[in-house]
Length: 214
Image 1 (tube, one colour):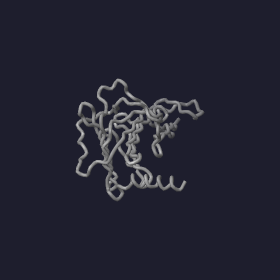
Image 2: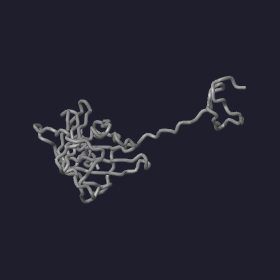
Image 3: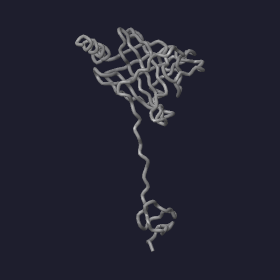
Image 4: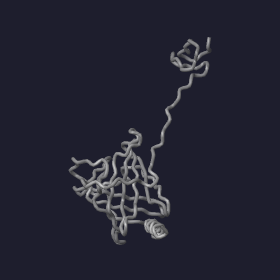
């Protein structure tokens, strides 16, 4: 038991070593899609580069397509860093063109290597998981640079792969629930354009123009 706890602590420390090294730079293979695979995709992601800075809490996530184009998650999503030192290295954000879709991206430790995970949820379907992918990654050499985006797409194509067991994000993101606005009857002497208000027992209609109540 003690040994397993020490191993878990070592893994968490390895992920968060960038708190001292300032950044994590990962080069990843083509993602494996666990949920929501598009079998008709003719231009899938073939490689992914991930960068995170603990100094300014900035994320850079680039997916390279088979065509050679590069799309950036920071251009597609309103990214918010939700990382916690020693706990998780994670971002969350809504798709800018379809804000009911929101994504969580997270770096996890896997043996001597790393994994980059993405989960997408649909708030129109009760926050249902509609997409999940996983990339196997390695640390980039210090001299290597992250790519520059060459395209911006509102959707996220993924390569066709053998499904893996579904995993969960650390503290999964849940879309905030916005309560429906309530209607209030107009104050006496104001116009309501002949509308009847719920809860007002009188059968009188308010006048269409401002004026004293008869």
